[in-house]
Amino acid sequence: MTEIAEYVDGLPNICGNENSIDEALKRRPPEVFRPSSPIAFDHIRSACAIALHMHQPLIPAGGGDLASAEIIGNLQYMMENQHIGDNHNAPVFHWCYKRMGEFIPQLMQEGKEPRVMLEYSGTLFHGLRKMGLNDVFDSLKTITCHPEYRRAVEWLGCPWGHAVAPSTPNQDFRLHVKAWQQHFAGIFGLEALQRVRGFSPSEMALPNHPDVAFEFVKTLKECGYLWVMVQEHTVERPDNGGGPELKHLPHRLVCRNTAGESVSIIAIVKTQGSDTKLVAQMQPYYEALGLSRWELAGKSVPPLVTQIADGENGGVMMNEFPPKFMEVVRAASDSDTPLMNATEYLEFLFGLGIQESDLPELQPIHQKKIWDRFQPGEDPEKLAHAIEELKKEDHRFHMEGGSWTNDISWVRGYENVLGPMEEASVAFNAKAIEAGVSPAEPRYRKALFHLLTAQTSCYRYWGQGLWTDYGRELCRRTLTILQQEF
Image (cartoon, rainbow, N blue to C red; front, side, top):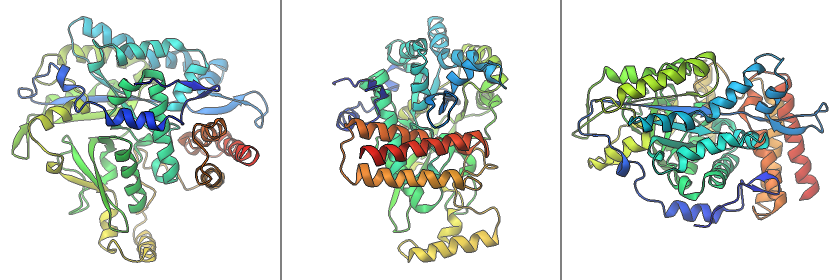
């Protein structure tokens, strides 16, 4: 396989190698973790999985004037301004981004079997490289590429710019997914990309509008993903609208659009809320200790308790996680409640003869209420009318998707950012995509880099103020590039 460059013309290599990526994904091996896993799947009672989500946005803050400031990583801004707020945490964050590359080899040299799933946004990768923090990449490459350690680490795909799927235009979300795959391959190689089977949506945000949810899953499937992680409160059972019953087993997320087309993907259910203490204190392991094997499709299988949390935010994650992780790995290794990564677990599960069609079905939240009033294939105006009626009847009903921050809307109150985002998206679609500009052209990459950077969720998380100003400025730059260079 021809390897892909990490940078082109000073920008992350996020487009232009689509054919190489597609070819590599088509030729990947059917199994990646089970052949080297020593876990006795037939004899364990239960298992647990943890994932660490790492992200920093890119911001126009490399200088005093917003309109001309260099785009830098937020970590760089924190490092250079440690006297402001919580910015004194920047050096610890730097350590958090590389420390799994220290913990995994140490534990494996002790004869233990650590497991961790890692998810790093493309904006974080670029920000770290721009700062010259090559030690982070060296550390991560050890556990990603070294044959001795890589069974312990599973990388999860994500949107390159940490965009929330429910309120990001479908065609742009697909660009985020593909950009991350190419950037990751540029850093770790195509062989490492072939082992990326699971997807972690930013903010665990799952679209629930039928057409947006359908396109979301279709994108993941067409980009080669086997499974997606979902938050338990963002999904429901199609028969009664209730939450998943056997939440520690894999499910099938089935999404139908208004035309009646259907698409599905395996869903690994992340339970409970977004409290970083759940992972920092290794709660999934202690929950798994109290569980025994369940029945699935007539077979006895171990349940998998799964959690994801920010890998750097908060005192418990910065300070308590390292010793707790070490303690639990040492206790769980060779026990009947080991740590497992999700793809490793699925490979063992399917090795028993279980089929994807055997998995219980889920759909995005609030969809049962829609399908009770609207039949796929009917006039789309009828759907819009049904949605409006449901909103009037129930103040909790919405079509903004579900996430692990259900108290935060990614739409309401952010019209002054969403307007420019929509404008930049429409312009990129018209001038770059529909005009047939090659993704290998420098101007395409430059415009795409700015568009994806502008769609980071952070500009719609912290409320009105500096962050919304950052978002609008990045949209302005995107439009300027499209107007002047296309």
